[in-house]
Length: 194
Image (cartoon, rainbow, N blue to C red; front, side):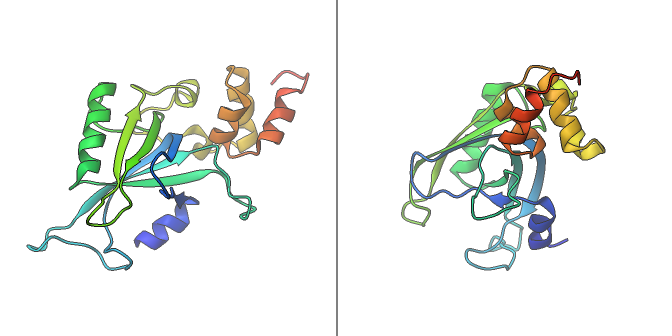
């Protein structure tokens, strides 16, 4: 499958880093490795010796919604180059969390610290991982190598009900289930037991 097909299949869009200070947080729903693409191209990127330039791509369930996209479910992706300061930042976040690598169910935060994204001023990031599956993943009993429960056959409403019953906030439930917060709030106000 091509990177374009992967992106379309995931239902998400990449995070946008417009200026230093931009911060995103979400629950990791997928961790993959991909060969990077050349800047402003669809061609695969390699080193001079032909070795592939690789990236870690994290898919996140977030609270962010683009009002211009009716079907925006908050899924966002972030690519982390494995040959730059981004790799060092990810290694540092993993060490601080006490894990060897990012895992499904962990809360991931990325902060754009400096730079504009060119050779003279590359973007500098700081990443944070919460150790072990937490929040949504803990409630759904998601294992590090497993898919989230919502993808395993339960509906978004079923997942939302389960998370609400476990005491998660409507904001976290909306991010995890893909339902709008207004729908989650209505589910939370139902008097019938889940």
